[in-house]
Image (tube, helix red, strand yellow):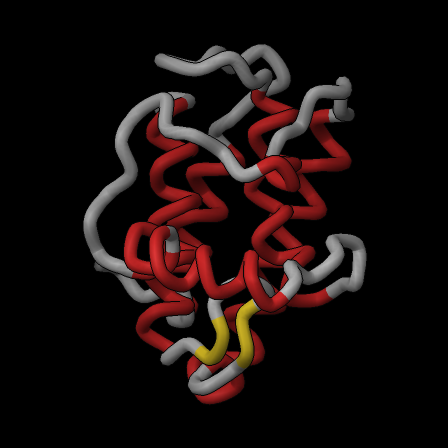
Length: 150
């Protein structure tokens, strides 16, 4: 899996994002391109903001048991997979705003680097290695950018 913490991969992902337009259509799924960008930003909101409440102990246990491996492994996501409620974006979003917000989060993550994330507590899964963080960040972005043909 590519390493999102490197400037080269970060630049590659941002170039893919910059190839999107407000008119880009998905190859599968129901989200608009602006909704997809907002959806991808949720992962970063959980790291950098308090916007999303943390799950209680029982829910966190269930997430670690059944969802963590799917999210942090190198195995790619299936098309049209189930999405956690906090990742559902149902309202309309402004393409340019969501695009810039996501790019800012990606740059912030790259600048903080692997060492910042190694052993950092995840919103839902407990402490993750930098490789697990990388897999969750890169795999999610790659999945949705591929969804929109970039």
